Length: 120
Image (cartoon, rainbow, N blue to C red; front, side, top):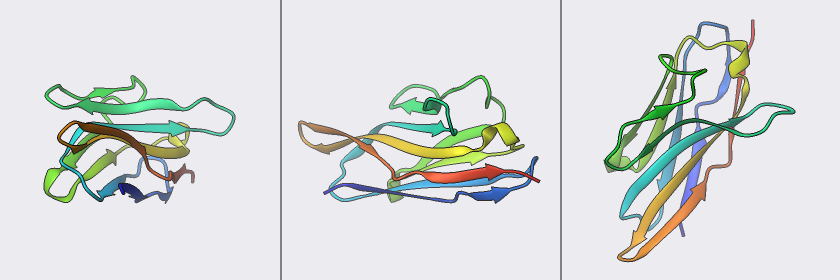
């Protein structure tokens, strides 16, 4: 059974940095796509960053130049490096991975969410 565990959230001052991690465990052949979403109170969940295998990363306009999505294939872990954080970045962040789990099996998985609060 595949599980995703997120970590790295917390309280940070404006201008600070955080790195979120999303570790996948279980029977995984490869990561086909990886995305980070966020949801602020009273707002809809929005796509922050994403990569589909073989293509370049895409970012929401609000985070371009500040956030970077990356992965460590050996660890089946996806990261979101967040720099120059602003109060508007405050939200619960979710990772979403599309994983190849068999010769003809693909699954869509979500992390449990991690709170990021940017405040002085």
